[in-house]
Length: 242
Ligand SMILES: C[S@@+](CC[C@H](N)C(=O)[O-])C[C@H]1O[C@@H](n2cnc3c(N)ncnc32)[C@H](O)[C@@H]1O
Image (tube, rainbow, N blue to C red; front, side):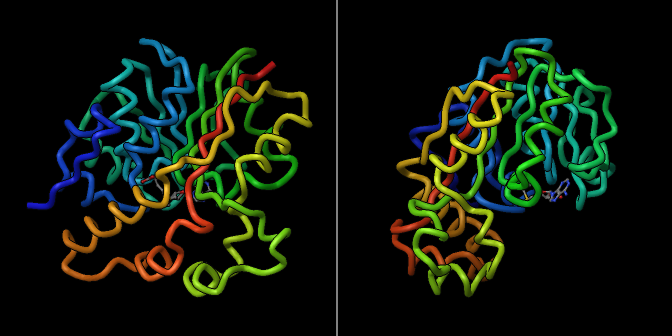
């Protein structure tokens, strides 16, 4: 029986560790969401898009913890598989590509994206595309792998990071990079852009739990142990559409 408790995330602690680890597609989605939700105002009945929802643990969490209506949209995971994993009738699962979303403009009160924005959200024109699906005043919340320093500023991708993810690390930015990238558009007001102080340690804890659950060493552990929190964390980003 794998233990997965975190003193900082009491809501997440009530979810079954085996269920969470069976749905693993990346580090600690519920801890990231519980942290991000501190910078969002999620109220019962709001329409929320969980973009890049994977197997849907975060979608179940949003519906259960905040009473919001959730659309769980993902590219790689089949919606029938996600629905079975989520196990709730109040979450709609949809197969969707982040650049061709099958929703009406201004449909959502909030869009949440946990550990997925780095795959599609760094292009300069993406914020304008995505926020078109938010009502005016709607909220955007993102948790994404982040760096303590910009790779552009370093001039290279640190070897231990390059070894695991290669050029894809170019989509991992500092919290300040995201703040500027969003604020300069004047499309949104940024309400949070912060690097998690415990992001690296939480990622390690998750990867160790995944290793124990699967009976084999998680692929991210070499990178994380070499890093020791020097470069790697997660960024928590929140904004409101003007
Ligand atoms: C690292 S997984 C995280 C999944 C889930 N949010 C979690 O934290 O467990 C990244 C997710 O992003 C989704 N994704 C990647 N590129 C996408 C795209 N272009 N459009 C929609 N979803 C995408 C994948 O399908 C995948 O489920």
